Structure formats: C-alpha cells, structure tokens
Image (cartoon, rainbow, N blue to C red; front, side, top):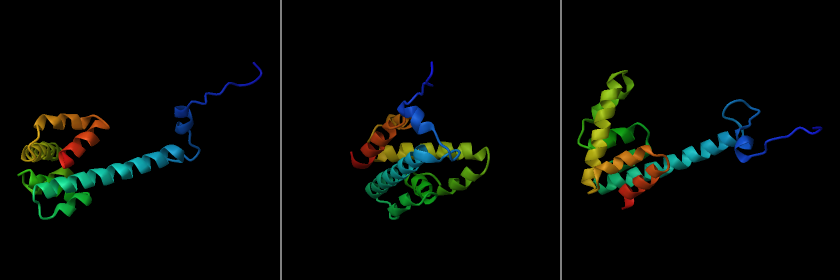
Length: 134
C-alpha cells in the first residue's frame, strides 16, 4: 500500500483536538449543549415552582438557590443545602433532596415513579417538560 488509510468517520473527526482536552469542535458542542440544558432545566423548574405557588420562583435560575427552593417546595428543611458541602453528610442531604422531588411530583398530581426516568439521558428532559407543562 502506497497511500496511508485514514478513518474519516464523524466520531473520529469530532474527537480530535490539537488544543488539549476540551478544545475544538467537541468542546464547543459541549459548551452549547450545557448552556441549552441549563436554560431549559431552569425554565422548567421556574414553571414548576410557579405552579406550586412559591413566592421566589426566580430562584430556579440561580445555581445554589434552586436547590434551596426545591427543598423548601418539597416540604424538607432548606438548611440541608449545607449538608451538600460536608462529606458523608452530603449522601444524607441527597436522600432528603430525592424525598423533596417525590413530594413536588405528588403535589403536581403526577406519578412519583416517573422520577426514575430522570436518570436516563435525554429522557430526563422529556420528563421535566411533562412536570412543568403537562
């Protein structure tokens, strides 16, 4: 063989970067997808908090305050947010956050088992949309 063979598949092309990790087309795609996912998720949680009658629904747009309002709307102590910064205690705080999600879904009149679908990528956006606008 006189000519070297190259693999020009799309995945191979997008995975290449000459700027180290996070650079190039893949890094740009990740940044855009992350921003779109953040805006979509925040808007859905904003609508959910409005449905629940929370006075500070705009907290959904602020990264740490959205957890505060989620715990509060789910009838849990919002002070568990401090537990997320303490090792081992953060696991207990996560359990209380899941309980808060279950309480929120029950208040919306939806089946709490739908929360299990939130661990599946892409499906979680559909479920969150269903909670906010369904």
